[in-house]
Image (cartoon, rainbow, N blue to C red; front, side):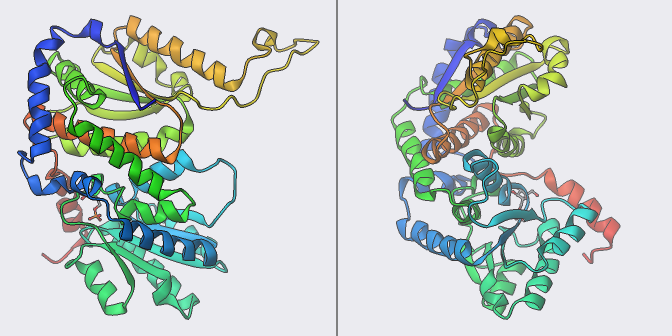
Length: 423
Ligand SMILES: O=P(O)(O)OC[C@H]1O[C@](O)(CO)[C@@H](O)[C@@H]1O
C-alpha cells in the first residue's frame, strides 16, 4: 500500500472543490514540463528521474568509513542543510540504541553555551566533521565550522581526512577553503534548493552515517516521482495541494502538521521550512507549524479545538507503527486502568488519533490524514517526494515562485550591519 491521504474531514469544509481540479491538473503539468519560475530549480525532480547510483555508492563508502572510525559525526549546517538529515534520522533511528557513531549538530543556531560545551564534550573522542552549506557563506554554520576546524586540526594528524565539505560545485568561501585544504567534497547540485536537498549528499551522507539504508530512501522518492508523472488531479499530492489552496482562499491561515509519533517530529520541522520558504511570500501561503500529539494536545490542544477558526490540520501517522507495550490486568486496579487491559500502546495511540481528528473536525478544523504504511526508508523517501511535489504545485496555484526565499535576507542584512560586517 502506498502513502494515502484521507480527506473525509476536509471535504465537508470545501466550497465547490471539484471546480478546482482542472487548475490543479494544469499546475501539476506545468511543474512536470518545467513551466515554472526558475525552472532550473526543478533539479530535485530531475535527479529522481535519472538516479546517480555512483553517487549513492560513493556516499555509502564515505559513510562506512565514518561508521568505522568515528565516535561522533559532527554535522554543521542550518535550514535545508540540516533539517532533512535530522528528520530522516529521527524517523528511522531506533530510539535508545547506540549503534554507530553519535550524530551531533552544530551551526544550526547561535546558542552560546551549546557551542562551548559541544567542543568540551568532543574532547577525547574520534570526531569526523561534515560541514554542509550550499552558499558557503551562511553565518551560523560558517562560524561553527571555524571552531570545528580548529578543534579537528589540533586533535588529529589526519584532520584533512576527517573534514568533509558538502557545498557548491564551483564557488563560495567553503568551496574555496575545501579546495585549498584538500578536504573531501560533495556537491549540492545547482538546480536543487536547500530545502529540496535532503536526497543529495547534503542529507544522504549524515543519514548513511547514521546507518539508514540511503538507497532505499532515495529509491522510495524515485518511485514517488515516477508515479506522479502520469497522475491526474486524483493523486494524493495534488489533492493535498488543491485542498490547501482552496482552504487558503476561504480564509484559513495556518496549517498544523500533527504528528502522532515523536519519530515524525523532525519530518514536521523539515516540512515547515519546505512550505514556509516556498509559499510564504507576496502576503500569501498558510503558516506551517508542527505539533506532536498527544504531547501538544496538553499544551495547545485547547487552542486548536476552540481558538480562532483559521486553522487547518494535517495528521501524519503510521499504519503499522508497531504495537509496543501491552497493558496487563492488575489485581488492585489502583490507577483505574484495567479497562485498557489487553490493549497496546499502538492501539491506544490509534484511538487517540481517531478521537482527535474527529473532535477537531467537529470544532471547525478541517483535517487530512497522511498515512505511511510503515516507517521505513522507502516510505520516508516517498513522503519527501510527496511534499516536494505538492509544494511546487501549490506555489503554481498561489502564483508565487516556490524556489526562492528573498525574505530571509532581511534579518541577515540587519544582523550583518549590527555585527559590523564589511560591505
Ligand atoms: O546551505 P546554506 O547556503 O548555508 O543555506 C542554509 C539555509 O539558509 C537559507 O538560504 C535561508 O537563509 C535556506 O534557504 C537554506 O536552507
